[in-house]
Length: 444
Ligand code: IFM
Image (cartoon, rainbow, N blue to C red; front, side, top):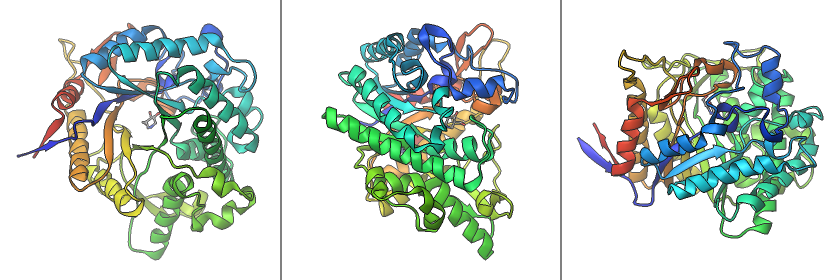
């Protein structure tokens, strides 16, 4: 047994996203977003919606108490763009801003560092009606929204993340169509959505930096190492191409202002002179979402001719994702070796399981405890190797609306009963709370 101790300024906590927990979709002047439309079109697998979700919009104080009682010192939340600029451009909704004022004041009063994320997938529908992330004209509205938020909360919120998982927005929203807005535009649509997010992010970062000093600015990417299923040259090529799409467009964009060479030809029609400089920005903090590795194989007929391979793993989550904590270690080490060891934090890491509620109401989610522990150990090992890791936030504080899966997949360390809205901390909540309080973990 060895004890892995974390740096004294390491932060611990949980992440959430507005659309997945807030509910109150019609409250206080909020405008429609693409996920409202997608849900109304019957695209959610279990037929549920986020209309109430965890009702966090009304129960935020109770949720802050849960974070405080867990002895977490950090919390990442996202801001719902349609609450702030309901039409996507133009009038600002004061009552939307008031909600995030209350939330931030509550977090600070509880001694919790707020990390705000500007875009976690709830695009105002009027912007989608004008092409959404396919339309380069989205850059200015996003930068304006970033300025509105940082002017309002910047005296209290010092950590600002621009985007969450731009690759999923592009691939699932505009490629496979299983996320809002549900479009199937193939490779070109995927790459265009990625490039326009990069541009919007660059413009937002510059707008904030021009007005505020002393903020930690960053973004959140789900970097997942991509491996070939076999040594066959076509699988090796497929994994490399997927790495370029999934990881490198976003990572190389912000860190280096570079379009991956493998995609240069495909992206040439959408890249204008000056774009490479515009997407690069010296961020202070890179959020990493990690769930598993990706095993890829050549599959003609798919976008990029890449399909899923066989992961060969003996542990799986309820999302059918393999449990591979060593992939997180490898990823952190590769950022150290190849990217100049940037300051990073784990912005999401967690697992859905089919939790069982015992007769006494307890949820002994041993698999989730093991998942979190193994990944925290991977983070600790990477720290001992000199990786520049600042914090660990699990996904997620609460069971919530898991996008196209609706309410059927539970990622929370706190169970939410969607009838009564009662919150019940699971064993994983207690585990993470102990790790946070001790600032160390026992590694087998
Ligand atoms: O729920 C999502 C989150 O919104 C983005 N990252 C992955 C999570 C689990 O699928």
